[in-house]
Length: 255
Ligand SMILES: Nc1ncnc2c1ncn2[C@@H]1O[C@H](COP(=O)(O)OP(=O)(O)OP(=O)(O)O)[C@@H](O)[C@H]1O
Image (cartoon, rainbow, N blue to C red):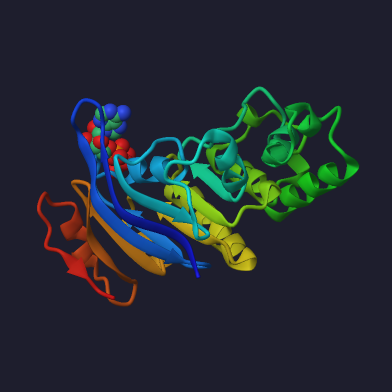
């Protein structure tokens, strides 16, 4: 079964910029896919359309076989609960504790956000939040303010928050772009370990082609809003990936 289906999606912004041009791909449940392409090739626009932050101008998107292309906010809410997101800049609430940030991962399950704040959270959610922090190796820092952590630790907190959410499909937008090579590799290893444990489906934007080849089961490349590469890691070469960063790469489709 497909976790994600993107069918002939085009996105034209009001100023006329065509960021996505007839993009199609399907991702099976449990598949780990890396999305690559140079700056401005349309990767973030693709994510925003999948996450429901923006709407395609044309085409359709299905999550777990349900069409989400033009769903209203309230109908999209239960679907978003199943979408875990990791961002380059972590998106933590920096003046709050690590523990509180992780508790917020459960927000999509309640009508009132107070239910996931430290004074009101249930014992079950507190225990769960601590277990998530333990899984990422940060239980000892639960009480520390999020802005007093290193970048690598902040991304681990974001991963713990995602564990708390208990999603099925992960959208990771350059999760290691703000980290040094060592911390970046550690975060990728942790993220992929958890993804495998949980059998999550992943679509991960990366700029580091070596890391992409190492972690991605399958690689999809965008150029000027079009899919120009789609193949398993066994069939995609380093050369295919570096060609992606030229203006007019050859179309490569290894299926
Ligand atoms: N809101 C917007 N209005 C107009 N054009 C936009 C808007 N958002 C993005 N674009 C344009 O759409 C194109 C694709 O942008 P997008 O951010 O998706 O690229 P990207 O591949 O994610 O780039 P990067 O690697 O730099 O994050 C670019 O030409 C960008 O300028």
